[in-house]
Image (cartoon, rainbow, N blue to C red; front, top):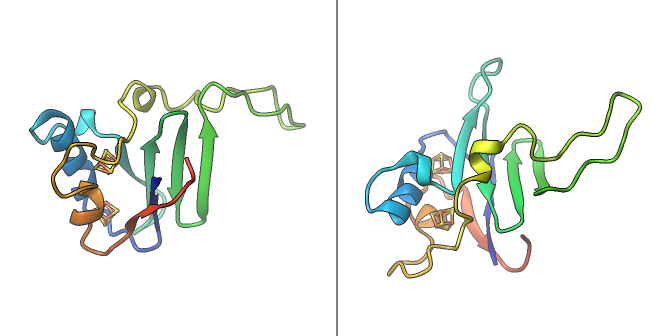
Length: 126
Ligand code: SF4
Ligand code: SF4
């Protein structure tokens, strides 16, 4: 099982990020969160989320889902040299992977708190 995000529903409130930090540290510690909101400066109301999974960084954007396996290099392309899939996401890589809020009484906290039901638990996946 894994958390699944529908970025088209996201309103950028950051509640998921705060509650995940709370699950980790019993405080609103954003740097401990396994889920991270990002906003695109060039686009208004454009939100995406990055989730640290056990072996991948899952990026949920309005355009769709992208799974970047940690430590796996992308194939060489005509546009440039090989690059590590995780090269631009080092701080996120240092965080604990989502454990679906193991041990929390009410289950996955981000799913419970999202005001627009943008997060759900999916069977299988990353
Ligand atoms: S399910 Fe729990 S550990 Fe996983 S991202 Fe959501 S709040 Fe964080
Ligand atoms: S709680 Fe829901 S609406 Fe708020 S940032 Fe997270 S996914 Fe987006």
